[in-house]
Image (tube, rainbow over all chains, first blue to last red):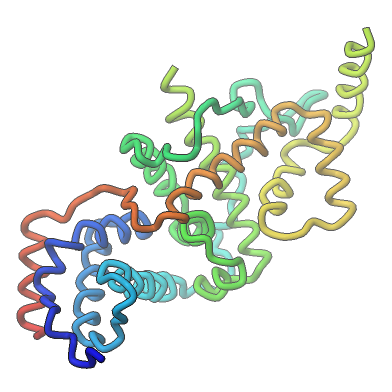
Length: 198
Length: 99
């Protein structure tokens, strides 16, 4: 019916209406301000080009965010030239200190690094800006591709096979990365959030 | 009395079975793939005897649950950060020259 309905589009207004949302979305996934801004720009420009792909049953915001998601994946692909794990990505020795290195309990958690109960509700914890900052800060300490793998998996809920494809890694390397990310993030959040609060 | 014995038994098993360091990759793997039968047994046995690893596993699911709310309601913007005024002007200019 409304075949010529694109008149309502005012691309410049997207910047004020959705700019911050798209920027926050991108930033939380690439952890770099200028990359995030570039991605928002690419998104808005290709949106102008593909206004025909907008369907009326979705909102402008959802539509723009869908384009941004593709841009983010493209960015991950481009920054993933290496097929195998790099030495930096594969290095687990920096986590040796978490475990005892001698005695009858060798290889078990040291007393100071032993995981403790986290008494907080995980749902809605992201609404606390200090927690978000802590979390992104912890992610930034990981090699970039490891952080990207974790983000794709846990933040965006992609399947393992898709992530392997985006980052050009084998399932084995993917499992190594996820283990590393979890070992690091658990410890980092424990130290910088749960133990600091008390 | 019996709980004390059980504790002692668990310690005895823990000391003779796997190191936390060696089994920890499986705690991540079980969130990613179906473990083999032998791996499942190893995980079950270790977690039964090891309190810290039990808490490690529960911390990992905490880190998974954090994003549940956001994925169910993607329209909620959890990362509330803003573009600077200059950045917005740059974007508007880019759009104007592109139209």
